[in-house]
Image 1 (cartoon, one colour):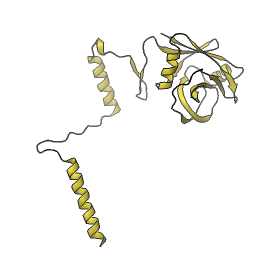
Image 2 (image 1 turned 120 degrees about the vertical axis):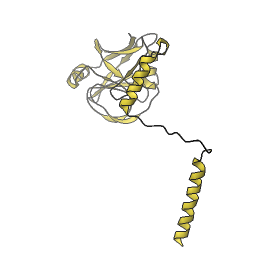
Image 3 (image 1 turned 90 degrees about the vertical axis):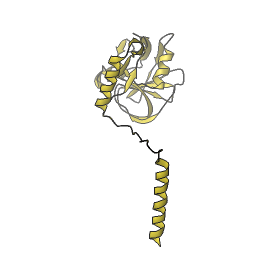
Image 4 (image 1 turned 180 degrees about the vertical axis):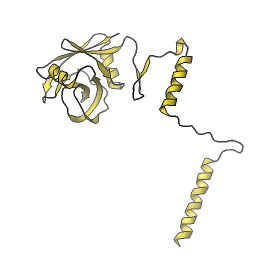
Length: 191
């Protein structure tokens, strides 16, 4: 009894699949061909080389293959007290909103030490957020609760939206910079 039912179900499934995938006679279905990341990179390079001035972009490709658009004249810069730090910013809505807050004047955030591993400060406005469970390291910059910036000189695990990472300081330099007293962060747009 089970074999005839199974056979009937199988035939119905085959008929449905055949009917769904059929094309008018004489037409072949073309499937996309997967390319390796190296081949895609070559294709992008070929396109950039043949693009005219009106098609030129200011995209940069990271080692992970992600494209980061940085509009000319709108590079977001960070200063912690009197120290300029190099930041690799994320390409997300939160960072774009931060950048927009700095269009008319620099954004100053008063930070406070918290938990012996981070400095936290109110941004003054809610930003878009995409919180994910994250384990942070010294130098990480995150958005907490949509309206607070956190800069780490230690490590913590929590749900944050990543904003960026300070790239020119070691963990011990971050601890020296942030681990002794409250600081002021200044964000501005530069060249």
